[in-house]
Image (cartoon, rainbow, N blue to C red; front, side, top):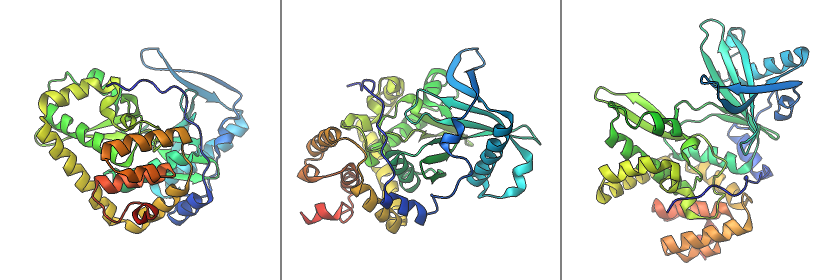
Length: 353
């Protein structure tokens, strides 16, 4: 089965008071010097082309000189906040090289290119509209995955650090045939990534929504597949959307896994990943419980998709508690509890029923 393209863009869901309390408690909500709406106040824009002179579908924004100077100073402050906890000592070494705007993404993000005067090294971060589903996805990534991720929220603005790696579609096109590719290690990591996404119900992991990190080891490379798009956290109504193996542009990697990894070994890797997620769950139970309380009360998807996913997961797990779930948050944490064998970690209301 191959998942088809999404039929429509994802709906935005506002950040609730309960979620804002959570973000404030864990230092995710802070005052930012630049808001998303400020970056829309450009006087012109032009297409950003790649090194092959192809349109990237990003637009580079042009601002009034006085207004732009003020905005760029605020963007530098945000970058310093994301990367060094607000240490102002490095501010003088930085300048904003570009502000790019993407019109085709769900969040219509701005990508900020920051350059260091001293050595011309550059980095990026993103300014987006705050969406509750995406914020839950970012928090679950921080708490349950092997990856650190930094972001902050202020009112309706979300800022995120750039995640380094080769975009999945570029990796599939340009790296799968390389002689130095360690196919078995890549296959193992993709199976584990597939499992991470399904356990916490992160959807839409097509090849362009994740990156591949390559780390040289004393014997061949190691690989880490990292999600970079969290818009579809607990949003879609079909179980297959939460399994990267079912997306058409991931098929070359899926075929690699099928060729190199037998079913018994694949199940072993799945169990290994669930064990690691369970350990992370047990490291921060209080914080995860606070997140769960908020997510189980929030509306972050439509009634139709909620009903569809309940039905799919009830059949998959043979567990009628899914039929009683009222929200995507309850579905997510029941799914986590079942897959990680966490007897007391399903939503309390479902445990008591």
